[in-house]
Image 1 (cartoon, helix red, strand yellow):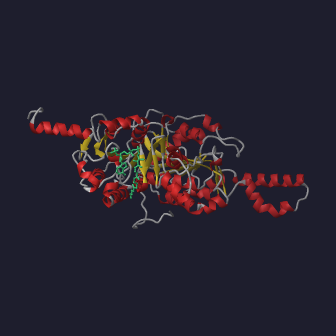
Image 2 (image 1 turned 135 degrees about the vertical axis):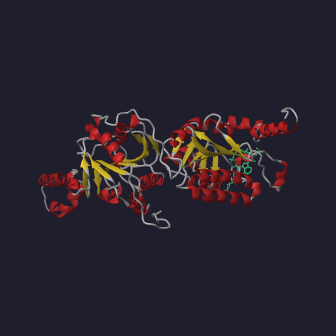
Image 3 (image 1 turned 30 degrees about the vertical axis):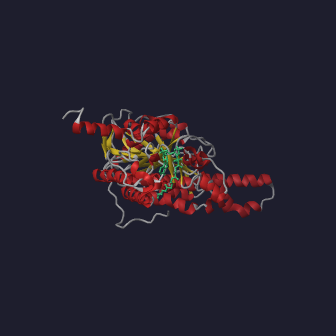
Length: 520
Ligand code: HXC
């Protein structure tokens, strides 16, 4: 066939036309805003030359508002499959140059097709969102299209990893597809997510607020926790997706890839023996411990700016992908509050769903007291984390670094929540509460009866010391077998790796049920 005339030429021309989306003018406008087009984004995301596009010739079928006269090949979304580091992924990228990436019935069908393929093949789905929401001219068929996508997001949850990048607008009910996925990433400046925009907010509540302050990357990464990653540029975002996928399996029936590791498993770091301050009220940076023990000190943190009193993220131990949950004494003393509990619970469930072993590093003074937390439902939020750990059947190792008090001790993957191996550093304090609080409760009446302040202080000090002697250590817990061993801090890497090796063949399942009823 001749490429200059006839049928082949027609195909070539149609392909060219499809690749222009809504036309060069709109592509230029997209670039002027500092944004890439859907195709450019997919090209950056996937391994070179791996993209297999589907449904390039799909067009909308609407006749409303003269829409039948305005059709673009591909209709507002670019979809297909490709590979990332040689592993199959399915992808859709909304094309803002076509009706502002707004969702039509046919566009929804295209997205659903790749989601269905991903489920059949057992491969992750990556969605790049840049859309004005429901295609206004289509009305209810657009809403139905969204719901078709939502249902697939729900059914795919826990089966294949789903990642959403927000590289432009994402408003109204459209936010719920990303919200149903495992990870959301937002670019600074150019992306926003909200259920109702600033204009509606003003008319309904009188509140005057900018788009950025209402639903920009900064607020969703630090205040609401909706977004797991905030990135400065789309390039950074795309690199982050590629990096993240390397820690994840393709689906719930597979393991995450194991990579070659030349970082010695017996590498010991002497600084770990010194990192915990003598004074239990002094903070230190838990991330130093994490970096000290994982392969090459490499840690991919999730939700880095949200609920900083708990740290979650992925690292490798001897090449094996591992989820890490750790209290952060450097922020609010590592206390567990509503946000920290929700953040960690969701992460634990993700890891459990995708066969990623869990390491928990504990230094927690307890749950944050006060009416604000009680009214915000700390009881149910704390229960979420407890539930997530208790239900998880993946290998679970816990290392108590310092404080492990009260209910928070139980929540943080204790032995009785089916922790497989629970270790403690000699600096661990495993008790119902800290010494000051305990003495106040136990000796309050006695203390109140001592008039002389000096004598009172001496009495309190003596009692506190007695309490610390008894409880501010790991040995009482170890004497019951709740702690399997007290380990030298600098050997933590070695002990964790060897323990995970022994847990490789772990088999544990929960009682048969339709599903659990996690306290949402
Ligand atoms: C049809 C749309 C559209 C939409 C944008 N366009 N949004 N077409 N349906 N929802 C078209 C515009 O007409 C324009 O066409 C092109 O896309 C680019 O839009 P601009 O407004 O020029 O771009 P910009 O200034 O960057 O503003 C982007 C925007 C704005 C903020 C997204 O377009 C906007 O506010 N759109 C409406 C958003 C909205 O209210 N959506 C419905 C939300 S409710 P031309 O031809 O000029 O290129 C919803 C419910 C979902 O989504 C429920 C799910 C359950």
